[in-house]
Length: 157
Image (cartoon, rainbow, N blue to C red; front, side, top):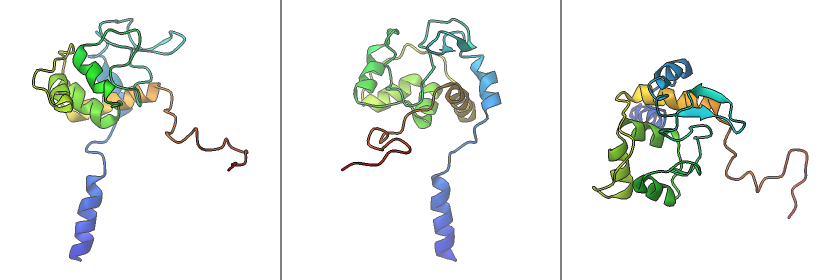
């Protein structure tokens, strides 16, 4: 019995800390739209306004941190991206709750700075905004997609 409870306890650690709610994320994103927009490749605004203070958040899941070509990022976030770090739910939630703390921890540099002064204090709000942004973004290609044969094609050795 004890080993079953231990296994259940460890299994629960793998679950997300908060449930995501896309509609709640859409409402919370209203706080973000002063600086950010979600606009697709055709320029169609999917969320927010035509804000340019912050980068376009379209396609954020799986994007290298600090890498939107048409946006001028601060040095610290570019340095995080140079390590190969990509935006995933955990990184996004940590970042939007305290951008400076996130950058300092990722870089191991207490002098790391951020241009983003806004913070979403509640982890559930941050997770919901992530879910909303992800719902508007194209699906990220699996890492091994290039190695896998297309559907209906035979693998070659």
